Structure formats: structure tokens, C-alpha cells
Length: 208
Image 1 (cartoon, helix red, strand yellow):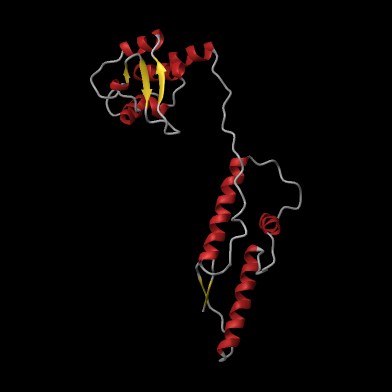
Image 2 (cartoon, helix red, strand yellow; image 1 turned 180 degrees about the horizontal axis):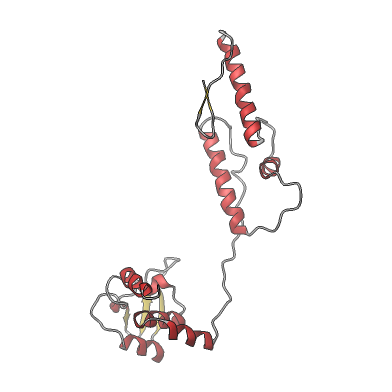
């Protein structure tokens, strides 16, 4: 009995021979036929990574531009497949092991105009308005603001400890930030009332 290496479904076929070595040869050829028929791939020890990529995608004309992040995701999947093939003893080494991921530029240059900021604040529920105002003033990420505690909004600075790059960041408390903080009740450890994520869920539910 043969088992498909991709779908894992049983595949029964008689080798019609009692010779063990012949049966193994027949099985190997049948597996190769299944691979070639379903995936356009057959065992080729000298195949290059470029040849494999072209055949796998089956592209006959120039492809449309693809963003680096998309390329990286597909490369990660391919590397995982080839690494598993090495682990299972199907390959001596992965031909993709030296292929580097592309650099991804996630910078954003879009800035809200003064009118857009006013309209955004006007549409915010009361509980969410202070959070949005601080985000506009400080440029801090939503997670940083939700994790902000009152003890970290003292001594003339907002101190963000839970940042994306893991480094502490401090922002001076100017008149605008001070006005927003003064309007917030100090009844919870977090600046934005209660557990930060439950606060956000309740605030956003009013928009539904």
C-alpha cells in the first residue's frame, strides 16, 4: 500500500511481484508518478532553486510586481517545506537555506490633516476620545498607551516601557498632554481606566 506524501490518503496498488527489491523499485516509480501528476514535480537531484521556483509557480509570462512582505511569506513556507524534507531524509540539504529574506519598508508617511483630526475626535465616544488625543499628540502606538500606568505619567514625562523595540521611551508632558491627563479619573492603575484591553473593547463596542 502506498500513501500520498501530501494528502496522507491511502493509495492501494499491487506491484504484481513477490521480489522485495523489484517491489520497492515499482513503489518508488509510482510515488514519482503521483508527484509529477499532482504537483508537476519529480525527483531531480541537480534541480536548482530557480528552476524549482519557476516550475512550482508555472509562470509563462512576466508576473505582476509582488510586495517584499508577500515574497518573504512565500519564502518562509518554502523553506519550511524543504527543511522538513531534510528532516525526513528526502534531501541532503535545503537549497533555500542561503536565500535571504527581502528587506521590508513599513514606514508610513500619511499624516492626518488638522481638519481630519478634528473630525476624528468629534466622532469618538467620550471614553475613547482621550486615548485618541494622546495618540495624536504623542505618536505613541495603541498598545503603548493602553499599557501606560499613572506611575509612568509622572515627573513631567510619559514613560513607555512596553514598546515595540523593547526600549524605554520618554515623552515630555506638555500643556496639551497635561490637559488630557487632568481630565481622566485616577481610580485604576492604568491611565485609561480598568484593564487596558477591556477598556478598549467597551469603548469600541459603542461604535458598532
